[in-house]
Image 1: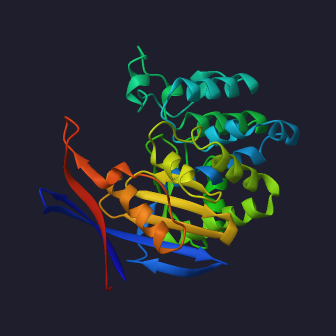
Image 2: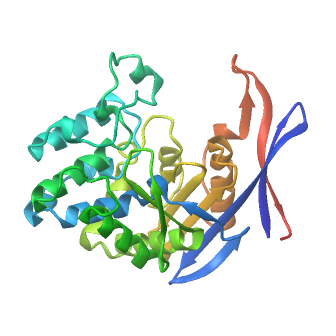
Image 3: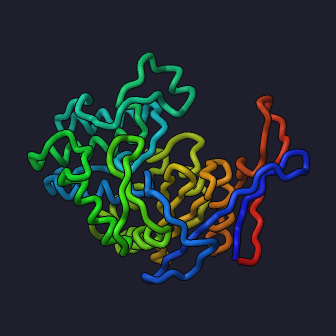
Length: 314
């Protein structure tokens, strides 16, 4: 089986985007389309990175965290005022300074919020929640507060954790937020996300709490008009989802204890939205409501084309 997304304009095909996807259920690959493509985890690893950070903190401090705080810790957020407020509150809770965040600064990706910002700061970075928990973990353990190196105890633990969850030894690179990111096949990503789904279903343990928080507070881990938010809101059953850069999207389906990884080979984010919906429907997890990514619009808002999934033989 194959899947591609065709982007057309005026009824004529403009670009073609191959798609790969893997579903792991019960520890086994139950369905796939395309090749088991190797990719970097990028932000799709955030629930597991947060899990490792929380493991370094006192149990009472972890127990006191609410769903929104956990969700922003696994977020690629928009930098909207509500996101920034959540991160500021976490820094204050742990007695940390914003200057300790190693993620670097960029303006909010949410345009109305970007217009409110005079100077981009690290706290506006979409990864600032993850980095707050990384910094808190290092402070709690007495580790070097510059946690970026692969050899740092926290990053080494993240590498080991993903190897164990994915059942492969991952390659390494540096993510956009300056910490290591890990490279492996989609099947490893889906396997790890199936573990998250199982933890959510069991309603036990820190990993399950993280997944349920992402499901309950999708805005906190993404933001206005984001694909993550749309998928969670438009699926009838509870799921946890996470976008990764360059066309990656992962889903935990607790009812089936299943993990899904979808990758658009070109990395196109608008195409990814169309591919994710098509794959979810194919595996029996349909979305409801409108899906604005299906249409191509010009700068005046007029519909001038479409994006559509095309299934075929392998």
